[in-house]
Length: 295
Image 1 (spheres, rainbow, N blue to C red):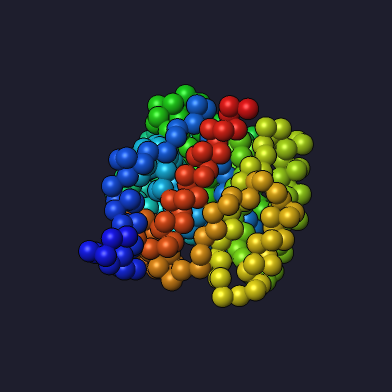
Image 2 (image 1 turned 90 degrees about the vertical axis):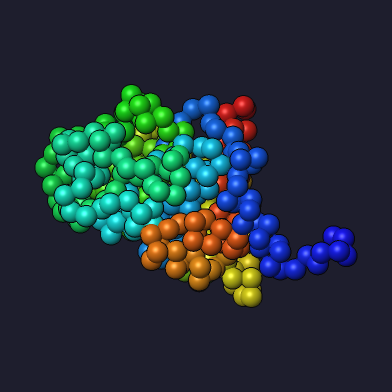
């Protein structure tokens, strides 16, 4: 930098924020084929919903039309994207039982015209019990997310945010998707329960959705002050290889705060390390998708 203007941390943050807020010159590549990704980990508190909404927002702000399906009865993705999810709102529940189409249930987030969401209402809490007695109970979501319906919405990516369990809602998400994205936190017990998730994915592959693959692992909640975070990162990379994104999401109070204000971190604090990390992860996801299609 020239000595005329000191390149202070505040100046760096402002420059990073400008790249998030004015992404016109930084468009991300759109896939030639739509990517439907289930974001799953039955372990709670790993950054699953946070990753789903912020990756979606990162893509949407950079020219990629993205739909988030909130399949968690807690409705946290709906809250972060600031879409109406009061009881009675057309939602993923009505979509699963066949009362409304995905087009009718979809809302546009105020954070970007490219960012769409099918919300979860409290009605979804009883859906798993209702689904048990329904025909094609494992593929209700897949039927709702037909190619024709998603073509009508014009979306490039679909992120399905699962509940932190391996029940029928998560099975529906795995049957409806082409890819699984697993967030893993860089902490003790990070890999606890992961074997069970991978076994379930394998069962779904074998019996219900042969096209399904674990395409992406995202490391979250990284704290560079601890040796443990580096050990977990290395262990995950050694075990899963190239499916692990190079970008790592740092532990951040701001990232945790953002949903409380009905915002993603990209809207709440666009200059923060958390926001830039999710933009970098979204870009890596988009570029990997394009390079994979070229093979």
